[in-house]
Length: 164
Image (cartoon, rainbow, N blue to C red):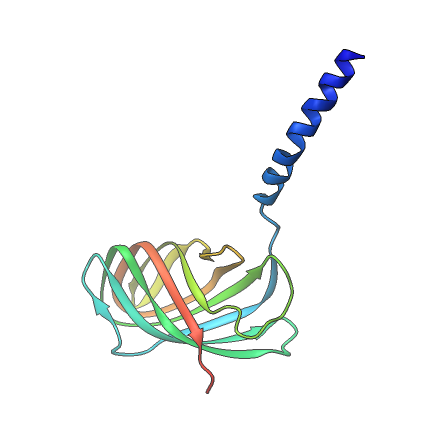
């Protein structure tokens, strides 16, 4: 009887910690649409270990019912970014932990690792970048660069609503 009471007390003590662990489990993300971003020409600042460029983006939901416009900035927070005459278009697959639709929910700050090289055409790889609250991930699916350059480092993306 004493042994059963001890086990019961242990279970009662451990139950709240089980809920705490469950809160930190990532919910699988599902595709909710595409985000196409264009770097605005002559908007960049390139300091070799830091770069930034203004962007304009269009989000289209998977069912094509929602189209939202964003403006913002992208670049390398820390790394190397050297280039000449680069023009960039990036298409991201948008993944979210819930399929709920709210106005301009992509607005916010994103970060992740990136790297590419361009000599006429581009080659490179970027891992998904995540929103700071980890609710949304952007997976690069198509990067089109023209010009000459190379970039690698810790990238960022900042988006805000562009209510045209």
